[in-house]
Length: 366
Ligand SMILES: *Cc1c(COP(=O)(O)O)cnc(C)c1O
Image (cartoon, rainbow, N blue to C red; front, side, top):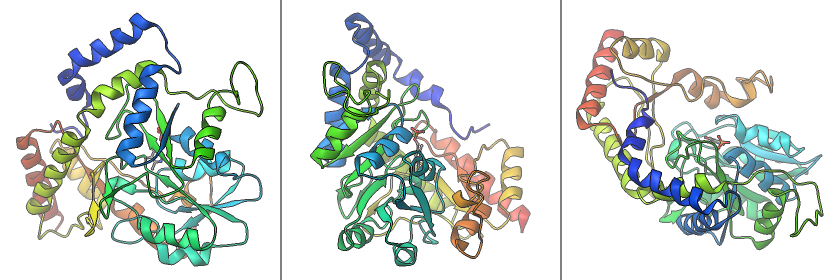
């Protein structure tokens, strides 16, 4: 049996350090907005090449609060890819605005910069690319497009912390970016947590206020805020894990390289790593015309897989704005994608086991 993901291995390996970090927080008993959170913010601002970082309750909240801080509200439109995790679009609705879906590039499945002009209207305020699966979106082209039109860029960097494009870290290209520490992400908390990173002083200041009841200090509430802080326990645990992030991502990249060699010559479309990109393989997602049959055969031989994602975002019942003609690449991706196990704690034998199982399953499918 090779599970799609097994977080127990990560926590068993770090148990002593994680317990010490948790005890440090219990001993100090400052649980919200304290030194651990501030230290984590400084460390991640540096990872992303941004000036500020603001810890919040989830990646979803980071996006929602960032949109508000960027001035997005009723009547505004935000450009978002038609293929992503649903929060890339629901957060736009939460901020009171309307998501406008843009199709994705067939090779990286990230926002197609050539499709932006068509989606633009006088109401467009922000462009929100997603660095899907750990690979950069065409962020240089998207940022140039936005800058030329006076639009802000909000990077959804939930899946790609540590990745770079042209040597520059993701999360530092746009006006602001979100990070998610959902437990299965490359840097995962032991619960929900997220962060907003930005080089803009005004955005950092506004999100600091929004996450804490609109408070400017000492119970002075100047606007409607929320209750969304990254707590000290999660911050302390995340700081232990952050020390491993580079090493873990190197291991993910090694597994991906091994998959690439071992899975060549099959009727599978393998993920690309564009020249200029450092992919961090949050997911190693292949494509196959008979995706469901392939997943079933792998499950029968004990290899866990997952589908990220089975529907294009506008095709979710929530949006019910389905249109194969409008977002053909997103639709094709939703039918074909299959994520293979790819996490640092996999053994070399498990990596070879996945390769053998996928080769056999592809041969069986003909
Ligand atoms: C995980 C994720 C989010 C949301 O993050 P949470 O911490 O789960 O709220 C947003 N966008 C993408 C692309 C994600 O993968």
